[in-house]
Amino acid sequence: MSTVLILTEWFAVPVWLGVLSSITVALSFWATLVIVVTVAIMRGNHMSRMRTDRMRAIQAAHYGHPLVPPRPSPPRPLPPKVPAKDLRPRRLWFGAALLLPPGFMGVGLLVLTLTGANAFMSSEPPELVSEVIVGGESTTMTVISEDAPSLGLYASPVDSGATYCSIDGPGYPRLTEREVPHSWDEWRLEYAVQVDAPGRYTLTCDGPSDRSYVVAETRTAAKNDDHGAATALTLMLSGSVGFLSMLVTVIILGVRRGTYPERVAGQRHRAGSPH
Figure 1 (cartoon, rainbow, N blue to C red):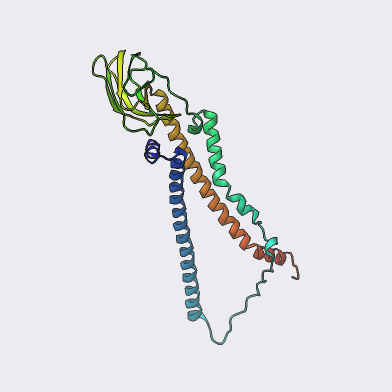
Figure 2 (figure 1 turned 30 degrees about the horizontal axis):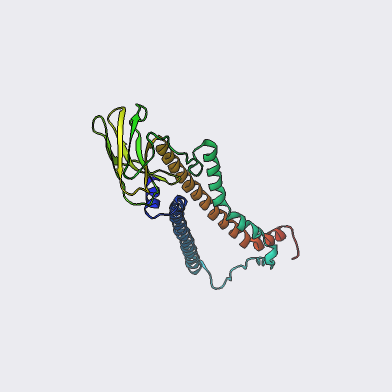
């Protein structure tokens, strides 16, 4: 999920589009697999019927007697002509089968929402540790022990260029690569802030005055990233299950609809109908 969010930031597209693209790739894989397996099964059945017919022809040529004609089998009743509107199952069921993938995905999102892990509904902002400054300013902040292991530098707006900031204080404070992506409103997590111990630190940023900076805790970012991963995984799994269910349902409906006239003829034959 982190990779998806980073790519959406690079290409400046919504996060939901990146998640949807990942789901599409996953569903395409399953669709290709189902098509390959279906073709293999159909080919296997065709080859099996051909071998059976060949064996029957060989046995008839070997054991048959030219003076004794084979006993004719009773005629098989022809299936009646059934209008398309009277075929069962109705075409409406095929349209209902198309709702299985979004239905499964909707159930997955509902479960995530009830458990509070829906990434689309949990974009809470982090708790600020420093004051908001603009390019060319500096600010002093107090870092407590709870926030020391999880701090990050946020910048706004997200597309206003590079970030030139430094942090001074006890030990060797520094800006490092962020561990997880995170954005809220017009703010985006740019770097992780590494400090050795609680204390007072000074944040200094250079650059244009229309770009703002702030230090905030990153526990919220990590939690949102976990929610994003859970949401993406749930959508992929539920979408895949829904897609496979749709394919199986459509195949079963198609077979039953195609054999409906034969079933009607068999029922009439068993009931002794003159038709």
